[in-house]
Image (cartoon, rainbow, N blue to C red; front, side, top):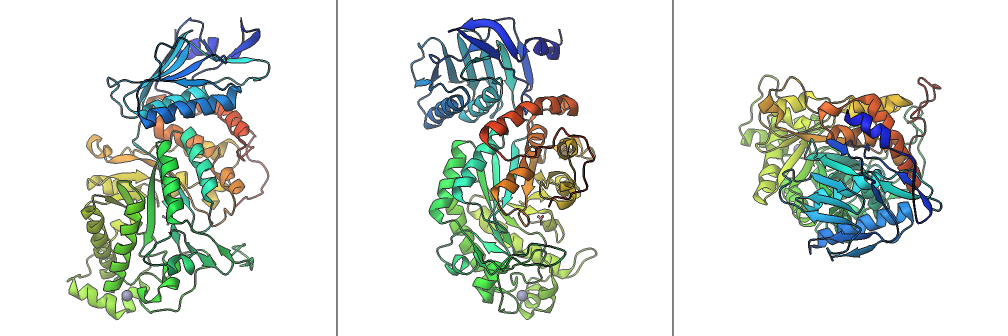
Length: 547
Ligand code: ACM
Ligand code: ZN
């Protein structure tokens, strides 16, 4: 019998079984993202009664934390406080077991019968994704009157991509540490394993750098903020915020417990107005500069011909690398106008010193940017890390080891993959959750738009396709001032992104995804997320434009 048919017979619905007098409600494993293989059997399934124990087999902090996570999720969903134990002779329980025969580093297996749920993986990360799947596989039920159960059977799962990211811009608007932790939990629910933290912008420098205190003293504050693009109305309200190094470590540690790597971005040499306002000698003209209060692409950028600028960048990155253990460090490279460099004696002198000559399709200033980024890239590499840059870094030739984040479309990613550079796809027209044009989409279109994107372009050969590490949803916050708006643009689009990042292409089917999405929306409601409510409403709706 076809898998889907078996599942539809068994899944969700009040079972006639009774235990402890409370009726049992059966869940189902057809969650988001969809596991690779679901095979159910005719057994009774596993009832989550208050006597169930959570057993972890490995004496590692990560496995203990996993057990704690599962207990916390089940407490929230069922109301039961389940005992956590290392005793494998426990009897009825949920067993978290490391099993090195599972080849995918983030994959897992779940085997369920009446007495046991075994969650098995070769790494603690795999166990964590198994736990997330079990949580999402719970039924919708009334915990006061009913008991939840998981169907008997076996799940085999592993991700399609090793990089499954979400970027948040905290430069335009600042989000406090406590909220970022909740945001990490939201990412974990979607099997996201990378948080790209965009920490510096024209409108605010948000990371404490001990060697350059003015960056936060001056650069983290702006006079006011643009509120309307068309009328140019300003709000007249001072705005500020930054993360201390201690807070950064707290976020990194919280994310790590959820198997999320935090990649910091220091966006350079453009988008640096806040740094220039703090240290004006780093610009071509010497200023004065002001932290930006409006949005866009600004002509004031770091002076690439000034030796002190490179030293500044190296000093900042030294502290950044100390705070963030990630292999990747993002150094931006996007939207850097070259008009100042064309007029700057120092920049022009550096062009001559480096023997840079204009080439067809590559101005001397574009190549100066590549030279600058290459200096930074070597510095990062000497420290055992690797650089990521936005796709503009292709324009002057590429730093040797750069991983390219393709945002202006997929073309930059294609070019980079053909040149054997690693690629992360985050094209503006599918995966920018804050793109005002796309935000005009309503109803099902909002999630369908994301779901239809495939991170691996057909034009790449099988060899070239290996360079696509994965994809990322990116959230810019010019028009996102608070957490409620952030959640509105993120959810439920993130569910569609999660599925294209995790689930295999052969299982991709939009209507089936939309069926499963409704269970995810229930979880959003339970957790109090302020997600878009119009997902299943017909489209087009009113002409109201929300951005
Ligand atoms: C970007 O959206 N400027 C990377
Ligand atoms: Zn200059």
